[in-house]
Length: 187
Image (cartoon, rainbow, N blue to C red; front, side, top):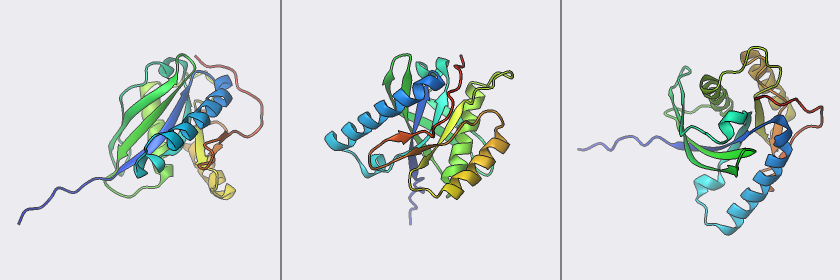
């Protein structure tokens, strides 16, 4: 009797990398237009249609030099985010299609925390920085209380790195950012 190796499910996410906080609105509009075109015009697998937006990383240097792999080693699991593809506007934003193999079931919140860890390991924030580097993106139909609880957790684990939440309408592709003051650029 031969045993087939266990297949590890691949979970698919989108990560939007922007050069500055001022580019978030434009990148969000461009992302929505791109996703609408892609899903309507191109053949897409169920995996791609199920790809979720997990966050926005503000980092001028990473926009044009996105690494192919982000390692993470947080307990209780270890793995890598693989960048399947990168699409963007040179110097302004890059949209990364991330794949991650998970050997056990974990929440999207745990995946998001691991991604922040991995990104901060690649590009550590400056100590004097007051500009949030990561804007968590939540599904548009997620209950506000769940978002509030996760935001508190993220700000506890990553003080000064996490900005205001963004929601994603998976029907229209729109990223919606709560109204508020814009942050200054971080280089």
